[in-house]
Image (cartoon, rainbow, N blue to C red; front, side):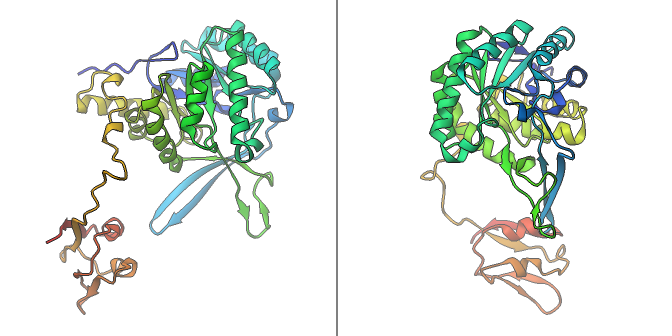
Length: 386
């Protein structure tokens, strides 16, 4: 069967739900064209900030932090990439060039310090040809995120109100992941007139070099993202989606087609991709689209609306969770390699050794499931409790 990947986002028609997020990968016409060639449904241009300091990025500004827990590892893209480097006039030229040549919706991203500049810059990017405008308030006011969530929410309202008063193109508010209760923030943005929201911008972070006894790279804090960040966004989008009339652009942690599907299943209208493109290149977009298409074909979904938000109704509340202990672990002796990992990690002392290098699970098993997850030989499965 053929599937329709197109979606309407805040009045824009996208050929598919993949949007390349605001970053260096969308900071020039050539890079935006590469996004379009690789199949992006839209791009959000790198943010142009009023604060001149945000136009200067040090080098090096990227590093991959790899951490492990047992046999499992995770990757963090740790970055100190700032905003657009060449000022507003050049940014307006970039918008015009991309709009003329890219053939996909071009969403401008700006960050201002006061209402007058929000109005002036919003009007300017519209006149330059931007299809929509994403408001970035978390970077120039980052210190307010943890100190004064209410004040940052006020700044979002100020930005939305000013931009909406000066332009007719869709205005999208980008949320910080650190503010208290993102649902309240999203509803506040909607009431202020936002045509859509993006959940979320990157997390701030800090990595220390133990030998040097100071932060790595530029010796300051940085943004960080990666596969791990998807769970936070999925959680809050699942709570926001049922209460919001405007569309949500999901952002954070997308590395495979299943991640795109997950965002759509919890109610995201489209999915922004950043770290995967930075680390793997623009071709990753084709892989994501191909995987999404195959999933829809296999499930029999003709279009995105057929399954958007479908998982939300399947999320149980704390009161609804079945708390009975229904399963216990069982070890297949033919598969067990005698490594003893299950015995070492069992906090219930339920695993015993038979003297010949084989292990069995006793009645003390709580059924937590950890040993089955960790077994390197896949010799443990969870079975119904007698």
